[in-house]
Length: 161
Image (spheres, rainbow, N blue to C red):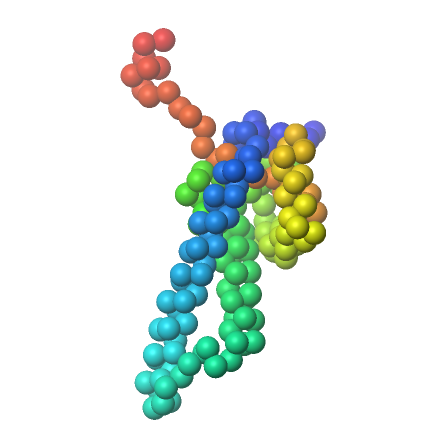
């Protein structure tokens, strides 16, 4: 029997909330990468006895940033079904049937995320066109993004009923 993710978690997340969560992730990833890089330059400089500057090796820094992006998306998705930005805006990635995603789906979803950007971001257009609001990377990975928080009535309101 196919479960509906909206029954357990809320409604399918729309494009605006997903975009805001993604932008929060991008900013957080860039800031932590910059701070971590400067800290690592400083520590290596102390250990090696001379100044170390990663900006001298742009290709290696680009590879390191790509790995950092991958880890910053895949690890929290695998561990809890949400990235930092998704958590702030109240979203969760689940399997298309509503069950929690596992490590494999988190890795696949992260690896195919760039496909949604391909061809001027047309993979994200599916969020607007599909009833289940799944982008191309969600369809490929078998995932959906839903609102993880349901509005709840305060206890006093329930007592009045």
